[in-house]
Length: 77
Image (cartoon, rainbow, N blue to C red; front, side, top):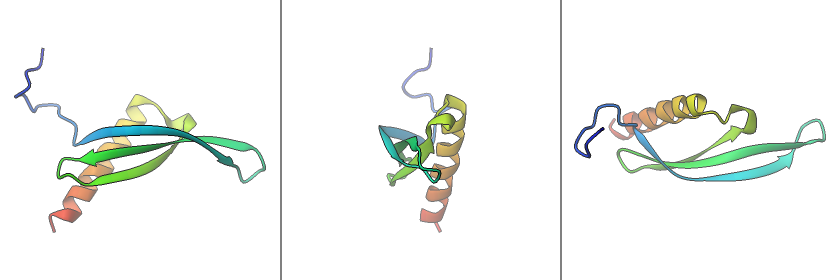
């Protein structure tokens, strides 16, 4: 069990919400994607779009971690 004071393994982001959306694809079909709004540790809020096929725990966690760290690094310049 992890206590509320334990920061080991803490993610550098918090997901605020996920919208499931559709759009017309380049080949004329319909594409499904998700818009994920998240907040970084420094308080920046950002949205990214993730294709339905890429919506797995591992891929989304990696993507959001990299983006949150990049944004916080730029903020601290």
